[in-house]
Image 1 (spheres, helix red, strand yellow):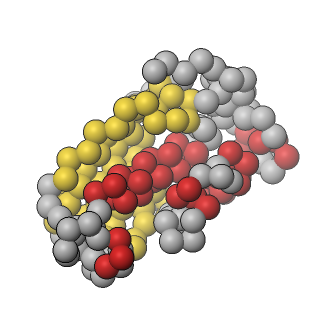
Image 2: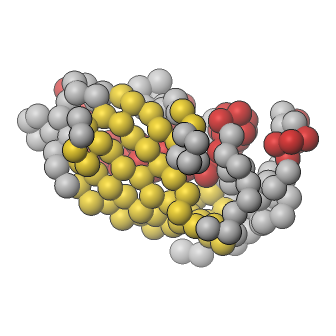
Length: 172
């Protein structure tokens, strides 16, 4: 992958505050995910879904799993300094996710060709891959400079390599 920007959880939180204040997942105490950054650039979190998150008896609702996967991939991009929207997401539900049992959710950048970014994510429960996903995102800002208002809270080292600035057209 030809991408030199290193991910940062501090950058993720700055961009989350500035550009995702109204995001259902990011602003909901129940669904907001807090991530750890792995040395390979993946972001990872653990959580359990309560029984109130089920659709069919004993299975966590696929829409909630999709929401959390989309949030994880969006946040992974923000860790790289990219504010983007989901253009296409493909999910493969391999096994039902059980309520009240911890899962590990991870997301990572696969390729970066600004303004397009390819992501992947997974949900693992125990040692079993339950859900895998891939997605294509388009940055909300043109490549080459800083997101609007991002300079207020970013250090000089964080500004290096940012990929966000003027509005770009979104392809449907």
